[in-house]
Length: 105
Image 1 (cartoon, rainbow, N blue to C red):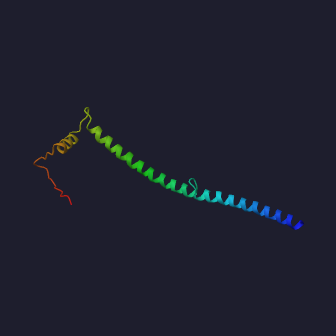
Image 2 (image 1 turned 45 degrees about the vertical axis):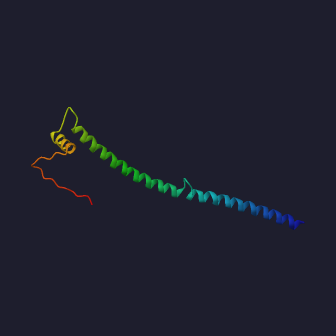
Image 3 (image 1 turned 60 degrees about the vertical axis):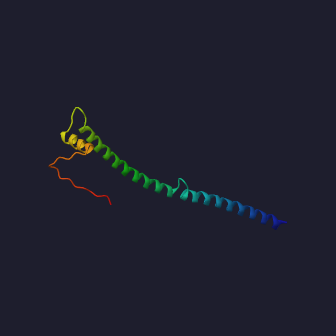
């Protein structure tokens, strides 16, 4: 009887330690590979870098567009810009211009 009680207490302790180790292992694996784990954090950092560079590119493109639009405002019209837009929209070419024709591939 004494040996059976000792065996039971030993197996109970072993089962508790095994369950605790499994629980710690589960949370450890999720901390590394989970949705908010270390791998996900690295991927988020890479995405932040890519989006930051895209934002800088788009800001530069917007500034260039705003500068071109400001040249076409009615209070201050740039003659060269007006001439360029009129020629583009009307498909007009000055006889003194050099025209290069591109053939589609």
